[in-house]
Picture 1 (tube, rainbow, N blue to C red):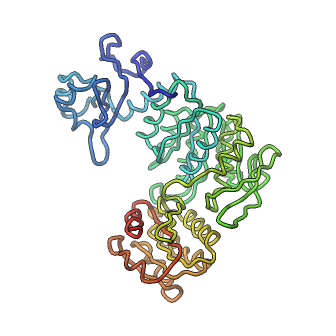
Picture 2: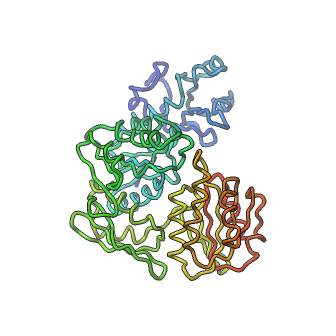
Picture 3: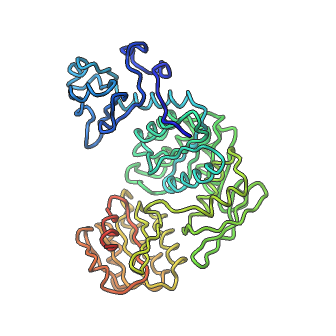
Length: 456
């Protein structure tokens, strides 16, 4: 049975401030950034976010109910916090990362780190399913892929954790490098570097450089995993002693072939070390084969048996909002709106047609965001995928960027356009009869609300 890790100051002598006496200060059974979860044995670490600043919760009453707390030395109320018994640090967020790295070094768990423009969460979930067949595995629910989520995940490692799987995201240059330096992974992977979030990075070269910080901020002994079909990513693995490739051709160390679709299932052959494993899964998505090869490559050093690989993949289920089938009132809803990029939009629409060729379809698409100056072209190009889909009863487009697609489709499909999700009613979506409704958009378009409305 895995126990929640109990922390002790002696494990953090390399990072704790000198203000802390390891003999007289209360031991931190848990370090928490959420004041609502704090009890008498917790130390509270306030983080300043976009909306809330944890320092605002450092009242006299609160600090008397917990073991202790940290605060940022430059905070306007730092003198008051010091008087309350707090311990000042230069930057609470940086301290969280250092604290987590120190804890990671005290434990023997092997760390897998995953980054890329798309597929991170899916590959993480597949890794978890594979690893847990033979090992005690930690993989956080949701993304947890930033400078807060990654350290908090590392602090969940216990003495009996064998493997931890962590995804890493970036909003700017040096983000991936910073996270890699905290986690110090044993195995790391860059899945891809597509035009997702290109607006943030300015161009693909900067985006690629940011993702590949994963390879440059890890040691040469760290196993590097990379797509065989992307020479630019492969080039960045040059300093690593061991490189494992994945893909859809026999040039890769781990690859898949013979992808098939029939009777609501997907099948393909998985090839590992001259061994072929037939895979059949209820998980329906065109990218499953490729994501599987990446996950299997990442788990090679865990020595998962072929039979356990086959069993884990057969039982695989999609994460929320990733081509997730929802049966509702004798109809099928496909929630694929966790996020959207040009590549995932194309793959999602292709999968929709493969799975539901003869079904009458309602397709609801929202903006793909953060695509920069080429956003108009990317949205217009969706028409090429839509023209390959049969039995479209109604196409609904939502958002400012989707207006570019709408203008080119008015005489092609029965189509409706709405500027915002608030303008869309469930009544408008049910003006025609349909068997399958497909929803795809960037997460901030809030399609969850629309899907709940149509379910009710």
